[in-house]
Image 1 (cartoon, helix red, strand yellow):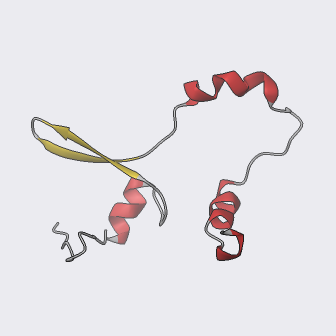
Image 2: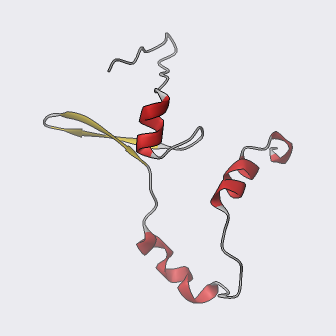
Length: 80
């Protein structure tokens, strides 16, 4: 599979690649260099970084809707 790079160093990934990576527009990818080349991975957060918050979150709160949060973050009305 080939991906063309624009003059602004931008690329467009095929939908199949985005689905396999589990990413959407606005998500972050990490490129790691190794002896064999480069590896592209979605940026995930580490749950160990959340450990200090464990006792501070109210267990009675409803589950977080990540899709709603993602779309709210992209809402232009909420930007500075």
